[in-house]
Image (tube, rainbow, N blue to C red; front, side):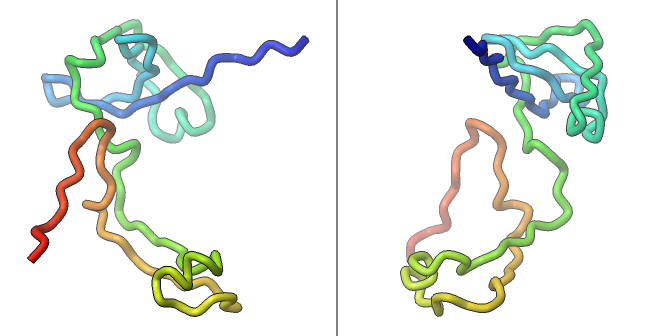
Length: 114
């Protein structure tokens, strides 16, 4: 019988002192890491011994973004739904503003429907 490991949820967050960290969520707490983003990506997790309450911090976007590049109309049905052409030989590329990424549990604010 194979035993599956519990999935780790890693978050980037800001403490009340303004400092930003990565951490692993365990129940209602975050086990704080001293690892950099690159170290987190390669699973080189370094724990600094701090634990903070999940509700006492501001959850941030997972990374600091510089640009977002999307591939569009790669699925025929989606292309048709959006008024595009299906079965393109090359994907359609488009940019999105970095403001389109929001942190966990943040409200999505839609523009007025004028």
